[in-house]
Every structure is written in structure tokens, then in C-alpha cells.
Amino acid sequence: MGCFSCFDSPADEQLNPKAGGGRYGGSSVAAAAYGGGGGSGGGVGGGRQGERGYPELQHPMAAPRIEKLSAGAGNIRAKSNAIAREASVPKDSNGNAISAQTFTFRELATATRNFRQECFLGEGGFGRVYMGCLESTGQVVAIKQLNRDGLQGNREFLVEVLMLSLLHHQNLVSLIGYCADGDQRLLVYEYMAFGSLEDHLHDLPLDKVALDWSSRMKIAAGAAKGLEYLHDKANPPVIYRDFKSSNILLDENFHPKLSDFGLAKLGPVGDKSHVSTRVMGTYGYCAPEYAMTGQLTIKSDVYSFGVVLLELITGRRAIDSTRPHGEQNLVSWVSYSYH
Ligand SMILES: Nc1ncnc2c1ncn2[C@@H]1O[C@H](COP(=O)(O)OP(=O)(O)O)[C@@H](O)[C@H]1O
Ligand SMILES: [Mg+2]
Image (tube, rainbow, N blue to C red):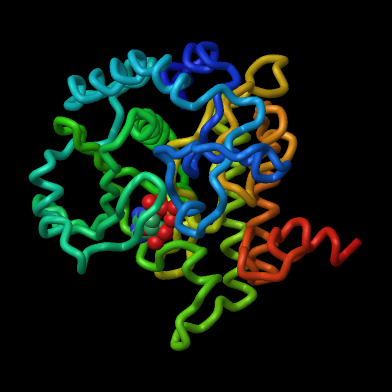
């Protein structure tokens, strides 16, 4: 894989080196994990934490998130305009054509029968996901329609398109294409028939059989291979930053693929040990040292992998506010139990 420095954004980071905000409504992993102060924090991420009612907190070291967004806004707008303009033949930094197709909004509305409720698959922090059938090829796909409420989603759209256009592995979900029509931003993925690992681990309906042990291990091994590809085979290495059970998608044979690359970041190169960045990720999965310092390394993903492994072994959620005090955070509970 060639160098694709165009979607690393050191300029953004330098503008607001300590700006906070995150995947889940501007809440900070550091603040949440280490008792930082509360804040209005709201944000584009929204997402699963919000759905489950986790507190929205602000990074104790962070400048208000709005500063970060406004400072980077011109840059992000320019990049996303460039994507829309260059939509027909996007290129990576080496000038190689990126394989993802472009779709018009009308094509994707037709594919999902106007985003009909029966086609709805699920909703995450950035938008709603629908099953669709492409009229041109008959291919069944999953279409994520991003919320149109902010620049942060635009940035993640751009990162996801570029990352998934350049990274290819049997344990990464394939991006079939995207739509950047006007202010619409949609991503078109291969359809993963068994949904996410989270759907198979937690809150199972009575008629659904729990995953057997060998499927759990197969999923863990496949997800690990996806991470290994990002860390050791991609050049420069890629730090995923959002490894969690809801981002591990399964096909009808329980073959796992990592999805959601909007937070991915190019890893350190040369003699650098880390990249300094805003703290982003998902509460319960984020490595404590990254949450505290903003210094991101490949090992941050390995920590999150460990959390998913614990979920697979125990059947418990990474964070479960319905459990008694002391058992709500899976890592703390396991550490305490096996001390
Ligand atoms: N490619 C896909 N194939 C099938 N289902 C998908 C696909 N992508 C996402 N989904 C479903 O849509 C849900 C929402 O996805 P997403 O927006 O990525 O949010 P999250 O990762 O927070 O769950 C997922 O949990 C999954 O059930
Ligand atoms: Mg996801």
C-alpha cells in the first residue's frame, strides 16, 4: 500500500493540540474514566454511549470542542468539497485511482426504497444504516446515511472513504462506494448478513442461540488478523482507534470484518513512538494511557482488543450501567475478581 499522507491531518492537530471531543458526544474517555468535570460537551458523535445514557463529560485538559471544529473547518470543508468535485476519479497521494464507486443520492434512495423502515439495520453515532439493493448490479449492500449536522461527520466521512479505499484485507469490511451529493454523505459497504458481534453477545432475544465457544474464538482470531494487517502490514501503519464489538461485523459463517474507519489515524513513523491527537474512541474500550495523555500508539488498539476478548469470554458488556456498582466496568471488574 502506498503512502497516503493526504488524510493524516497534522495541521488540524496543531491548530488545537489539546482539543477534546469524541466519538460519543464530545464526552471524553479520560474524563469519564478518571473523573473529569462534566460539560455540555454535546456533539456530533452522539452515538452509542449517548443511547445508553452514559454521562457526557469534557476532557479535563481539553479546549472547548467548538474551537477545534472551527479552527479546522476551512480545511475540512476544502477537503470534502474536493472529494465532491473529484468524485468521479478520486486519487491517493501517489496518484493511483481509488477503487470506490460514486453514487448519486437518487441511486441510493432507490436502493433502499427511499430509506424505508423495513430496510433499517441499525443506528450508530454518525447516522443510520440501511440494507439496500443496487439497481445497476442487483448487489445487496449496507448504506450508512451520515447525519447532516456538522463538520466532524464530514471529516470522518472523508477519512473512512480514503482509508477503506486503500486498505484491503479479508478481515476488513469492503467499501463499495460513497455518495457526496450536495450536503448528503453516504457510505456503501458490503452487506454483512449476521450484523455486529455486539448483536450476538448482548441482550439476545429468547429465540436466539448464544454464540458457541469455537465461533467466539474464530471471531477473536479474525478480528486480530484485521488489526495485525493495520498495524504490521499497512505502510505506514494505521491505528484503528475504535475497536469494539459493535464494529466487528459478521457474515453468515461468522467470519468477522472490522468496520467504521472514521476515527482511524496513521501511526507513528521513523523513531516516533506515538502520535499526539485528540482523545477519541469509545468509553470502556479506550486505553487508559491514551485517554490520559492523548498519546496514541498501536498498543491503544491492543488494549481495546483485550476488552473485546473479555466480552467474548464473559458475555458481559464493556460498560454496563445496569450492573451493581463495582461491576459496571468490565476491565475493573475482571481485574478485581482475579486479583
Ligand atoms: N456493512 C454492514 N452490514 C450489515 N449491517 C451493518 C453494516 N454496517 C453496519 N451495520 C449495522 O448497523 C448498525 C449501526 O452501525 P454503525 O452506524 O456503524 O454504528 P455502531 O458501530 O455504533 O453500531 C451496526 O450495529 C450493525 O448492526
Ligand atoms: Mg460501527
